[in-house]
Length: 339
Image 1 (cartoon, rainbow, N blue to C red):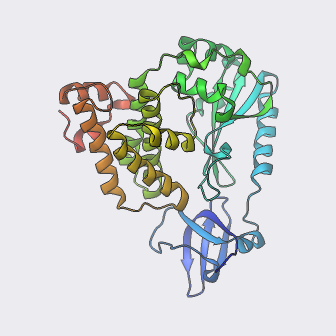
Image 2 (image 1 turned 30 degrees about the horizontal axis):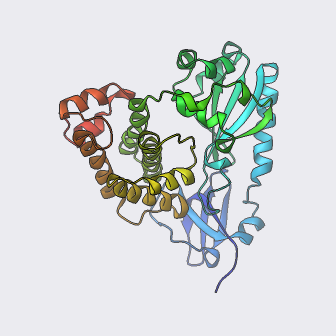
């Protein structure tokens, strides 16, 4: 048995010989890596980023292993310096900070929430870029800006943020969902997360939004990730809608909750969730991706029409519902003939 330690890393294949691969990594660095150290399949004709699994020692030798703690410390220090007196605290959210995920989990995003004293004092350029990621040593860094007053009042929150208020609140309020990286811990100044009135229309629409993004995306690996985001968010919706007092945003906790719910429709949801979970571990699905995406989308549409997953809607009502959110989901409406 081969017990050598391995590491997953993303890059684009530039050239290939009988014995080595020339790969351009997300950091911008190009290196020849011996095929003898490759422990995964690769796609020779793929021009987009793909996932490679190599023996760890060769990546360490080439200086390609990222020290995640040092990387995060550098990002936080840069943000503290940049926002200076306006910054109260920084929290980490999402899978990068989830210590319960498998070690094989593919982490590409670093999601940070900056608690500031004033939205108006955020530099204009930073505010304009808040919907876009920043590439940093192979990771996509996403920054969200909130104030304590925004968390304390939903209408204040909606003035400045496009995020779902309830999701944002439980993610920050509960210690298991977020990590304080610097500054004051402001959780004791947030409204109780057990008294929230969830906007279920908005929550499920956000899951469907990622299907639309997946259909729109030309790069397969990005389309696949968007698809898994859709499954995870609709899984979260199910935990809230059909469960009681669910206050987790972790994929592991969502998975556990789905498995505990006693409803026939969840057998189908759990199957899709398992596929998404596997993809995040090994960067590929067990089934054909486009077939899987079509089946999931049709399942969601049918669930609306039958009323099993959400409130029951006719086809024309569903089209009206879709057009209210995120540009109206035109690709889904056209591809699945919703009229």
